[in-house]
Image (cartoon, rainbow, N blue to C red; front, side, top):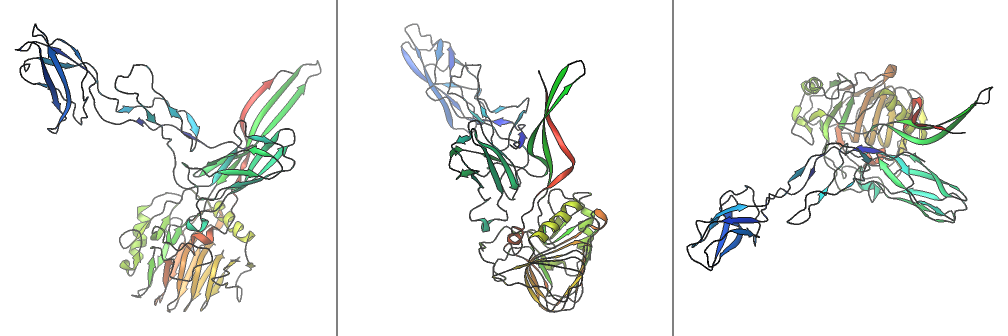
Length: 521
């Protein structure tokens, strides 16, 4: 059984900020006996809000405690109360305070992600209605993978004669409408106990941490089993938990038994695109053509090329024309300024922001090992894997995109391809080329485009230099651009990524001890 993901509860709990008086006292006398007079107060904007009434008997005294007919609704708490004639000289004093407007959290505690606690208030007796509050868990809210599955108390079910099928809902419906991938998992049984173990086999991506996916368990001849999914945002997480038991017996007969719960640590990584062009690494080297027709556009255009089967062609939010990510500094304004300075036609770089649209990309955390592992994941589902400098590759079609991995250098053009192209060496593109899909230059991290033409990369280009096991400066050089360029298209970029089943990397640090206990034996 896997550990759930947890989040700290650090955010203040807020109620409404309305101020109300729920009672008042009157002191003084009216000028006429056996009368009733109205009491009012302004809400700070000149509008009467608080209202009530006082009364005087035969002795003309209005002394006593009263309940207002309208307790008020204020942005500024009133201090002046008006009493109508013939009791205008009576003094009014509110007897109850204002409504609660905030509660401070003094200890955050830990709660399961996506499952905030209920909040109850006790102590002083409320006089104007029972207060209530809603808790919000702090922590990351960016889309992420499913990091664990847990069986709730009483969720084992019964009657199973075979392992049932465990299904994790996709991050959105239909899946083609978002840039996520569907997670998968397995369930196992103990015949006399029901479902006793569940495990994530593919973490997926794009899931909401505040709204984890539903999990269904079906088949196997039984019923009643349930599971809960937890979604993480990055870093490391714990997978399956193992119970280790150790028994020691001395020569004199003394015995001791120790049990340890240990968990497998995984390094969590999801590849993301920072723009039409994504440059990964410090001090990126970029050369751009002076052609007036050359452009990089981060505004989504799912109709710029025939969409792959199943893609929802509703446009996604725009990305930057060029997204830069430096794992050594996270945000490096000098790198952004350097790239902007390298642009021959700054106004031709269009996207989510004003031109030239070059910005640091928020892509979480990544290492050279993460990126190289992703290349391995692409290789595991590749249509074809080639050595360096292949004379030709499977170019695919819009109806049947290809996934090609070139372990080494590759030169292409003029040609038109469809799908995913991974090049671990230097990619050289010449002439009137076109590629509908995602080009990943991960390894040597160098791409060179030569010659003119009107071909486009419709999808995205991702360049990362992982040579030597570290992330180094990437290179992307264009010359003689003509009408070439890059046009972001979520159908050919994000939907292509969704075709790669990426399994997070197990940490080299081995098992982590979750708990220890000594047992009497």
